[in-house]
Length: 129
Image 1 (tube, rainbow, N blue to C red):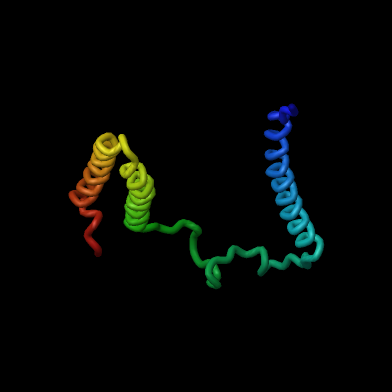
Image 2 (image 1 turned 60 degrees about the vertical axis):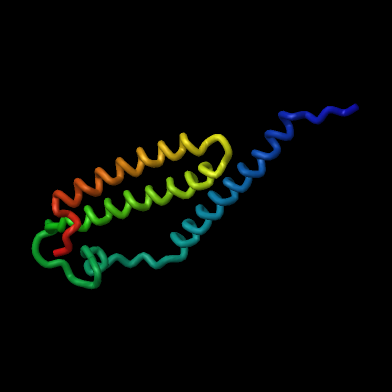
């Protein structure tokens, strides 16, 4: 009776992943190398000038940024993470023997999110101006 070599099978499956990674790195390296060899290099003062959105730079490079937009992005991330955790929880909740534990864990998680949302509301972050 022939017993298959487990280690050889294990390394063979990872050799495919390694080969695919090497091919991917080579593909990117060849693409960047070809781009570097084929592009024209003609530096002019206009090309070396700072450029943003088609507008020539005027004044200082220091600009004020509205912080409220970052707060909206942060709130979006909170709710995106919430949805990421809710979908797997729904599948585990249906499994036998996990119902009560997962229900308590999810209410704790939703409690933390609710506290964060109430904090943002009290600070006036959620009012659109």
